[in-house]
Image 1 (cartoon, rainbow, N blue to C red):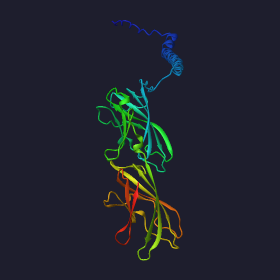
Image 2: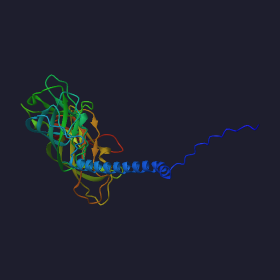
Image 3: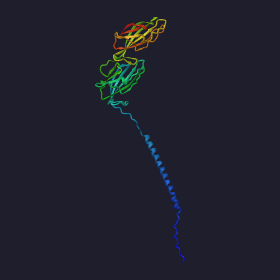
Image 4: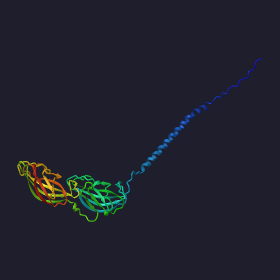
Length: 338
């Protein structure tokens, strides 16, 4: 008998509605639209915030390294002058402050500032190293060197300038007790001191001129002597010559000549270094430290100027001028009162 086969249950293949399938496929696209919208919105917000910040920054004022506030300043008027190295120095005033707005260099508790006027009335450019030659003198303190200088190191001929020299000090000082010292102790120079009060004789540092009327007949050369006439017009006694300060206890003696050559030939005795000497206190002869006399004098020349400078003991009332006999020994001596 044939077996009956049980009918197989059919597999459920329920069809998916088309709308549902389409909606599921559209979900990523909607997420992208949402993301894009948020991104655009964020950019718009960022632009708005950025523009607002820029406007705010434009209206704000920033100060970089603001100028320091000037501390109180005490000032003492001095107005005293003296000569050093051929320059005229005037201390206008002295000032004291814990600091100065235009000088941040100080190692002490405070600063003393000297306002100074410098005049170069000579024809030479003079070099000055203030850190070496300027010292502030105060009671019970060692000489104080500058910490900052606002003056040129080479005053030009015929000029005047005003500036300041700052000194760091350990504490409060009485400005009227101070002094300015000019001169290098390292080089042994003749020192110049300007006290801010009390007795002061600036004339002791001034140049002095001694008029002369000495005529000297000098014959050269030895094998065929020709006459030159030297007229000594004056002797300048100085503490400085061409910007160089004399050593302590010394002075410069500058002899100013006019020379005539009455002959019909050029005569060349050499420079002043070769034949002119100076004698102090009957001692040895001293050669010049500078001479501007020419090497030779043209025929018939008159009044040819020149100077011969010597360095010797300070305070001489008389010196001896010696014209050497060249190519031989000895010379002719002349007493010169100053």
